[in-house]
Length: 106
Image 1: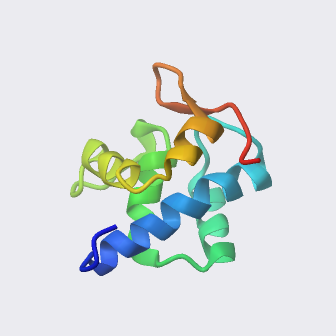
Image 2: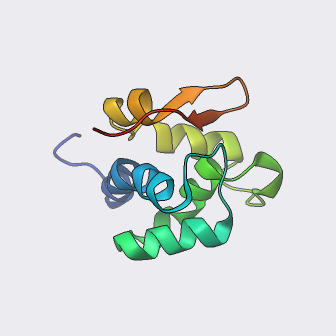
Image 3: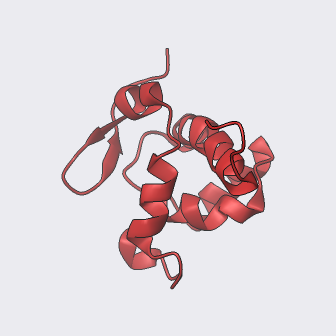
């Protein structure tokens, strides 16, 4: 991450690094989670609430994402830019419908 990364970038990086594993650990591997599950996991991890909308875009079904700006695609892309490579490759696989749980973080 650049030395002068924005607060949002740092918060997104922290969320992308920890949230996928917490969701899978608490609720099992899933293509999508509920807002309640996402909120509980973010609270447990003490993640910045400013990135909640990005987490929603990453882990809700698109039909459940009701934010206008950033759009679902924009928010997912921003979240994915901060996902550690190991998390993307080890915890998820591309199903054609989005990212789906598949591996583990060991």
